Length: 262
Image (cartoon, rainbow, N blue to C red):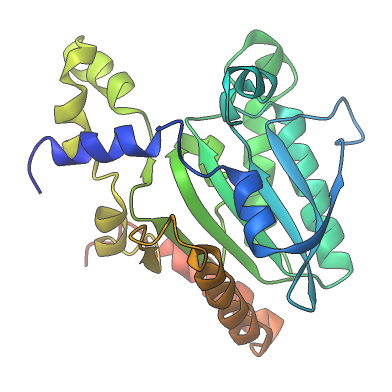
């Protein structure tokens, strides 16, 4: 991969023309019924979630939503969730566990919202609670990164049994611009940072962070969403055959193995 290729993928992941979480929900699921609020503070519009049918199977669907135009993006905080968004997601996941519904997450965020109010309401704790609870959630969890996967804001919905990335999505601890500003005090070196960060889907696959890459070759075709639907059905059927204690142990070991070099 050339030095500029990684940053070109970053720009594609950020493109305003990409499908958002709502598009995936409409294209894959039937009878989506949205649920609101974290029952503590507010309803965060950057995260949408609720109950839907995957074919005939009831599931809980959670997605980070950026919006399609300027007005929607402002309303959705450009896909940067507040603590109440992560707490809403966790509430829905615990509800799914209670009713034995699989959880499917679609992730697209540059990172959690970094405003003063978010910090005052416990942004770090909300993310940490999601990481901890998802690791022991007693129902199958599948996450798909559909655009940007930035830092803990993305990881808070990606502790799953199976994790996938779209071909032109990215997954990183920090944005290339942020990394370049810290390392070189020069945000124009973002292309160099993107290469060093190993943030592309191909990088994530080679490092064992994801299970597979979803091709975007036929993204404009009617059968694009049907292919993802079939993948989700196969994964959930497979995970439902595994005893819960083994599924949880496999999930734990999956994340423990990331970064292991021996």
